[in-house]
Image (tube, rainbow, N blue to C red; front, side, top):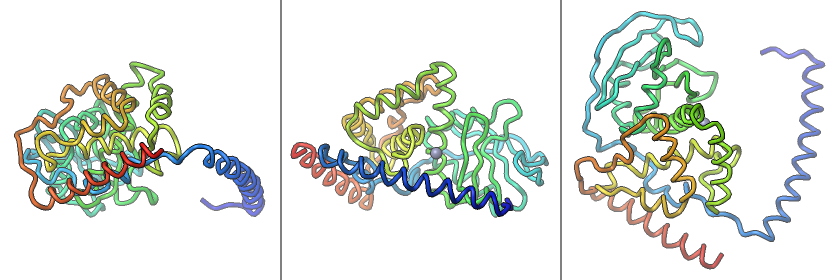
Length: 292
Ligand SMILES: [Zn+2]
């Protein structure tokens, strides 16, 4: 977008005012922090296992029909659309012709998404919606997600699945909110009650805290962690968010919660090391909390 000179100056003035206000707010925050100890962060604790999601999934995605030639919803450029099935779910996959992504690679990346979260792909495939849609570019963003769309750029499979489980948080929350309107306000209450943060990004705004929690929950169900996964640990650390997120999964129509009861698997050596690191982080976090 091109800006006129006066708009640029107007913008600068607003920025200066915002900067001044932020500085005041920061000074207030610092005072508060002296009184209250800083909250611990779930993403820091769980970092060792927040990688390579879905690496042990065995279900294969199959093309049900397509491709159908179509115009991409966002930019009207040519693309192709397929109906795809994976486990118990059926959903659409749309790829802009100029995006550097083959159908085979797109199928490989959805195979990494945990079963419970495939519900989000069903929601964005209803009626005329485009399903999981890949664009060559989204103006610098990796993805956008809501009840009506899940648009993203091509990414490597593990990274793509990690983005999809975050966006699924937004999609399923919006679906749940159409049944229980105050659910985001209840999320804000849960954040306060839990006495722990999820991530820096989540700290910016309530609905991102939710999407980041949804992402972490997905990582804790990963099959690579073994049969029981790490959901129980997450529930203990963040009980109010955990309960409300599982309620949202249910309200949004997924009946596959929790889905760690897949065929049992023993973590391989690499994953065992990551789990050991997580356990050490948990132990350290516990000590910090009691020192509080
Ligand atoms: Zn988000």
